[in-house]
Length: 285
Length: 294
Image 1 (cartoon, chains in turn cyan, yellow):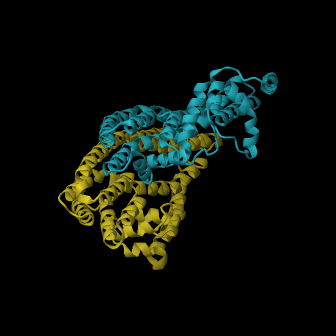
Image 2 (tube, one colour):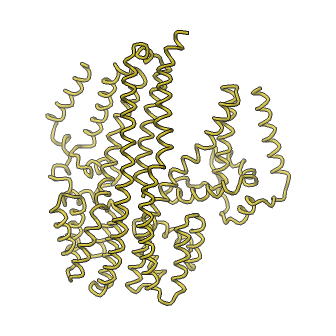
Image 3 (cartoon, helix red, strand yellow):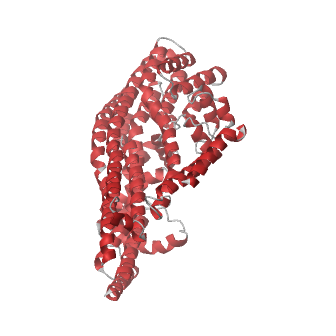
């Protein structure tokens, strides 16, 4: 039975490879459009196992659902802001998930010779990279959202001292917060051109509503005549919104803890109890 | 038991009679209190990731070597104590956890320095703004604010403000405030340093009205964040209580002779060890979710 499954997997992999390598035109799917439109720089030479993994990239890029790629891209954006998952893009990350999923499935089949443990192992392999990346991205995203309102206050303070919006952003980017680090990245990527185009581009790449809203509002401030006043109003609004949202986020924490408590407390405990009670019975059989 | 007593006696002898240069670091000899001006100055000269920095920031008057020795001793002691109850793999896992926990506790203490500053900052921002609006100079206002906060209780914010006030008198303004921003364990305090730098650069008094408005908004952000952090912290209580309840149930179950006998089987030991490991990972994860919630 296991052999049948393995032959099936190998045949599917061969067919996929032939399709990707021999059919020249790109399909008109949303994932393909998403990738064509993305402005990824030329991929650098990948070392070791990443090179092997990259063989899956073209298949992944063609058939992976766009929502999965979007989510991976957004998470990678924030993880890379603190130097984690450097050099990965959403396609390579999804390829890693597929490779781990397939590897775990084959391993499950070989070890247990049964479909159910193999599927469970495959699910685990599919989810592990997401858990690892998602944990980092969630923490960074929250820290970023928490520090953003104060960063805006500093920009407003600079502008109130008679500095232009662009110069205020430039000066405030020298501070120590994560938002300042992000702004330094934006300034670096804009390479001396008008910073606001890059600001909107980066905000969109982050898929963070707060940041997209901020980029749009900063553009309005830049186009407005009374820039200082507009910036002051915007800073006040952002502070008020943050204050209102903080309470709600704190209330959500309890609900967020339910799943970790079940996975890390109750399931291990039940397993321990079952083994403790079941072992003497098994031993007597 | 004899081994355990031997380890404890050995440690006691080491702590009491070892040479002072090993037992007490140079920094800890000079510092009488955790939250002193000297501590802030010394910390600013150390690498934040070093164990020496963490020990000093946590208020522990120990040399890194002594701390490492104590963690190893704690691991061995826990292993020896738990061996009769949970022999084999579970005891080893518990020993490893016991040796690791002091490091986790130390990291938490270092982070708590930043959290404590964040807690006090709304009050400090209010006082600093009021002082500047009244026409005081930045060093004078920082000094007085630091002293006033210290009257309530010793805290990590006072030495930072005092050190900055002292540096403002002896160094360039920008250098002193940037130094505060760089060494600050709190991003909000770092932002305050940049705000004060902007205030001084804009010409002080003329900028006071703007400073007041910005400070009020910063205060609003900090107060709501502190309130939300306190509320989120309540959720951590259940994460602490549940393992204790589970432990009690486990101890109760192991009173049965049959179950007690099964503790010697390797598969049972492996499952218990994995269970303990998962619970510890779970607790650390839950703590990180709560800490980063707001």
